[in-house]
Amino acid sequence: MPDTSWFVHDRFGLFIHWGIYALPARHEWVKNREMISDEDYQKYFDHFDPDLYDPSTWAQLAKTAGMKYFVVTTKHHDGFCLWDSALTDYKATNTPAGRDLLKPMVEAFRSEGFKVGFYHSVIDWHHPEFPVDGLHPMRENLEFREKARNRDIRKYGEYLHGQTRELLTQFGKIDIMWFDFSYSQRDWGWSRGKGKEDWQSEKLMAMVRELQPHILVNDRLEVGGDFKTPEQYQPAGRLMVDGKPVVWEACQTLNGSWGYHRDNLDWKPVDMLIRMLVDTVSKDGNMLLNVGPNARGEFEPRAIERLKGIGEWMRLHGRSIYGCGASQFTPPPDCRYTQRGNRLYLHLFAWPFRHVHLPDLANRVEYAQLLNDASEINMRVVDPHQEAQNTTMGGLAPNTLTLELPVQKPDVAVPVIELFLKD
Image 1: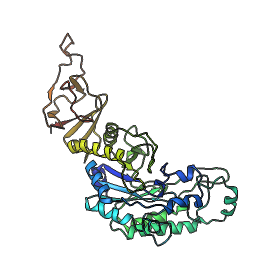
Image 2 (image 1 turned 180 degrees about the vertical axis):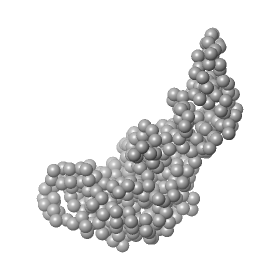
Image 3 (image 1 turned 180 degrees about the horizontal axis):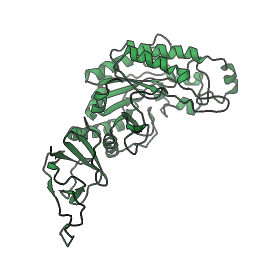
Image 4 (image 1 turned 45 degrees about the vertical axis):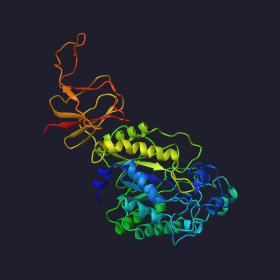
């Protein structure tokens, strides 16, 4: 198995969904949702001219946010390719952009110290040999379906494998391969979904491993993978397979869409995004947070605002995230623990009045401080036999450590108390 130690240390990555679907600006699945034909979708290809594209700015924003690796859509389900593939004309070099958009992005992020990941759709609604099924944009066009009934998925498979080989041989060391997605369990009666037999997943995975032996591969080819990928939800706890914890990465959006969506207003506030990151790490997971750049080639102001807000919190609290994972201790209500060695980090999602009580930590902590300014937090252990009377605290469970807090919440999105555990 490849080494996942860097991955579980870094914890926080940037997902980028970018393609010609940024022009309609109403979700990256717009071709599917609105059942747009190739002919009608062509106008987005013909007018794709990201004249303000500066990947170094993207990389700097991601670095400011505290992200350590990135994953970009080399090709999404619509089949459009960001790089100068020799296997298709449906690529950025043939649009008004007139250039390979992937190579400078890889170079820009590498120069900022990022690990590099490629998302690649195994679906392709543009390819002439990709069989029409219940997800295809032309699924309700009976005449089109009849003309396409002899399409050969094996020929498409050669294309899929060939493009994957290009990606893994033309851009240097690639750290993550993020395939998307299999749906063999779907059945529409007149067609079935596609999965490992269609993608020739075992052969594809073997090629990936041969070309880049160190690479981490996700779990969407129906042949396993190096990490699980829950999408658009927060798992209730550590992810387990056959009773054993596994490496996982939650992929999340800033609003309700992966691609640029001008009118989607479901923007998550900064404090929610930070809580999601903390919650993920507290359950031994990574978070891959998405930005959908617009068709001019820029991150929009609402995205930049959130990245900078997360970055300000990470600047002060990054050591409660990097290299941290789940703790054996149970946090009090509205809190999460992360832990790295003898450092236990208490993240307070709600600021309590004057005290917070930590089960099973009495006489186990040598020092406590607020992480944002390294100011001391006083500790005490209340006799469990002491009765509560007026201002005298009592009624606490045995082995409870009580922390004394200021009444005013620190001026940070999520306060963190750093606990130095005794050896």
